[in-house]
View 1: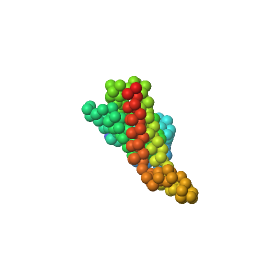
View 2: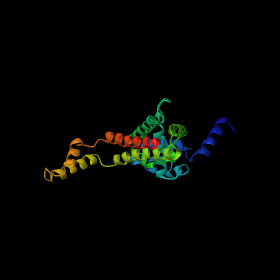
View 3: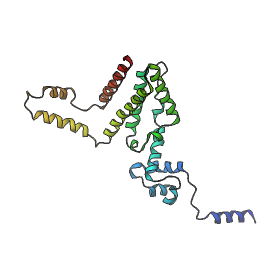
View 4: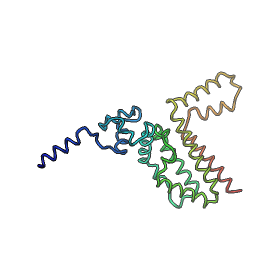
Length: 225
């Protein structure tokens, strides 16, 4: 058979076969579609395949969103949070807390699809190992170190959940609080009025600093006992 004949035969055999796709291509296509409108059919259209072809690589839409979220998080600066070796345990916890908080707030729409097991890359595990080592070397036991790191996660997650609220909802809560105070006689609730004067509007940065400061102060007392 001539070369042209073989080429025509190969083309005939390949005619109608779906293109070969990979999980990486599916994730890229999903990012192109965008999470807000993500449908398996839309991703399949980008790849010029049938939607059924996607299920050979991903279980369902939720798993695909999780894969997209993981890829986006792996591109964040979260991996570069570790401070220098001359930083004490307070500095390490602060650096970890602020980096985790930033990663969550910068990607608030993704974190609901992230599990710790999938969000933790090998490099991050090494860094968290360093953080635990710093805490243990400072005098904390492993149980306390575990609680401390989990508390940092809970603090960052609290802000993440606040970020899911409708825009301006916290500001409206503060406004309603002031209205409730104004409805009472001026000589009542002096302490609440003073609080309202000092914090007329929500300040998430200040609140996170306060929570982190309380955590560090509480941990320090454990070293003294």
